Image (cartoon, rainbow, N blue to C red):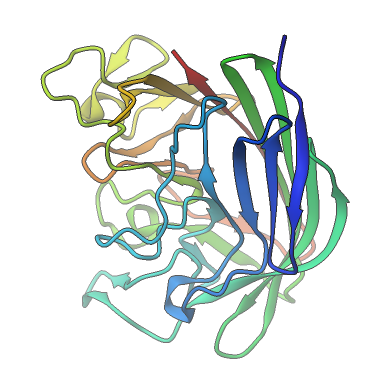
Length: 285
């Protein structure tokens, strides 16, 4: 029998969804208190399997602006909504006062199986409003060992100009740096393979390993991992139902990003909207 879910904890900053028997599935922080140069945005952390294995990492020491599972845009209208240092072709990486932030506006729905809210994307230094977003996180328990999270977003340009959406590969020529969109920073032990061929990264089309999957176009990618302590095997599938995208993936600092554009910046005209729809599947094996 599949476990049921309940909205068990609510505060003015976060909501928690648990298995009805008490196990935490995820905590969604919708009013974060992270630093301005981390591009504050709502995030889910921890994200756990149904057996309670923690899958995400928050503010790791190598990149403190990696916030569990969150959605962001590396470069939006010339501003940094990803966090950390900003890269420029002629200057390299430097910390600049150019970060953006996402602000919760209002809940549309808040249940154990659906979290939907409106957000504003603003320039941190000036408060200028660039995007309005309608976001939904939809949870479904598939079996006693598998659950899914569907993450959808409608982003509308409310600025009086076209906004270029991109990353440092597409607009600064930094090869391979197409990290943007939905990002998942994983727990450090997930892909520590210790010589085990069953642990690693795979993708649609028979692709295997970081070098094969990174930058490749595929409809889905999977992480096959193992947790310390329990020794339990876990699997995460990242999928883009609308079709293939060019994945960004790192194994040693476990990171997956689902970039909605790749070789060129995506111009979003004033009043236009971008629709995104991703599904993540979390399995205990």
